[in-house]
Image (tube, rainbow, N blue to C red; front, side):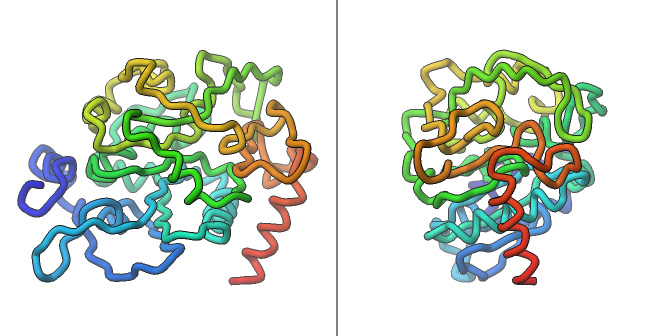
Length: 287
């Protein structure tokens, strides 16, 4: 801790004038299902927090960062709502909005024609945004949660730097979503849901400088880690629609509409589309 700020945030303030607005927002809302519009609003809720008496304490909030793409706002909203509705414990959900990260000087990569979403690379900022403290979850916005995310956090293995589902995903489609190119590469979809051990020494290299510099292959294949530091999660926590086998009973705990979901006109009849539409209706009825 440096001057009351996690090291990651302190380095950002000292090293780049554009980051000077990246500050802790001290907010005492500590109820289940908190959501934030920007990463700056969320940072004080994940890991260390400075109350008025100046004593550092740990907030027992499960911090979740969700990839955000302007083309899929409704997907993000339903993902967030389903996370909140099924969680038995306090969570803080934050969208990774690329324009916000750019305005704070944290994301400076040039546009990549191979990037299918706005969060292709920003996801790897998760440990940095969490102040390299505790555990934090990243997931794509095209997830529908039917399980309790607290059960996922309970699987955290302190010996691992990252935990994810070890898919061998080789899709047949040439396109996905709204016509984006479908690519095949080693460890495809491992990075679509990552449970980060943010304080693990092997993750300390995930600074904005590295993430803005390294290749997509390096990041998505998790090449900053030795293989034995990548823990395996059960497939139910990243169940790939169109690829994973349907369970004999019940539902996957986290359904990933990786090809495209029913918010796209050409993906209306995918598996579990009815459950996504029901969650969307429940969200609209609450508003």
